Image (cartoon, rainbow, N blue to C red; front, side, top):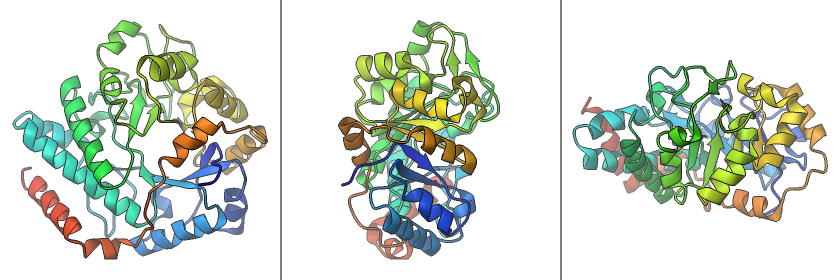
Length: 343
């Protein structure tokens, strides 16, 4: 396991260009996130991830494969339900909903790793209020306890499938209306109110999560900086009070909600200085180049390196077609059909 750089970026197409290869080889690049535009087929993604690792063998490859409206890999992959469906079932039968959450979390992890992705940024642990422009049915429930119960089951399933879970968006995005992709949201509630509501799933699941992704939201009664750039949130609360010792990923620094932290170079340095182990710069190649220039020589701490390496999948990917021949995949696929028939 080599040294993992502190920057995760993306590529433009379904195969690597010479410029992509040059960028991925940069010593500060330690991660790559795959989007729908990069996807043609399961075989193509497996080829792509293998080629990426030929250029940078210490890279961590990620995708957003939450299910519902956020699923980057579709053709040939199981169409996963939105997390809110587990919450709806839990209102009638919580044990059954937890069993399904476990099994479909495992199914997601197995499929994603079969094509060479180490992690999916999942699950969403935000309160799933419909008033939130960005969360809504991406969350398990509007109530804390079902989120904790279903989140724990889903995380356990992912772990059985060989994948560490990433809880997002710490300390909670579901109670604000604005979408941090397009605005800088403000949450004016007192810290105690947040701790008793949105923060609860992250607090109770801290030991089970491999990583956390903070929200680009300013919680103005707590700190003037968005959570992902705040030592109060990342060091004092997440690390010290909650005892979380996994990876902290920044959310995408090209989002509108990150602008409060300055230009791209300032955003990256501020996020890392505040306590992030890796920063994401997506959908803007020029911004990625600026971040890499700003972070030239920025040291990755041994602790961050250890945390990041813990997210790496332990086995070599064999492809989705091979996975589908396994008894376990067929059992889990049948479970997905069983779940879908309930709705």
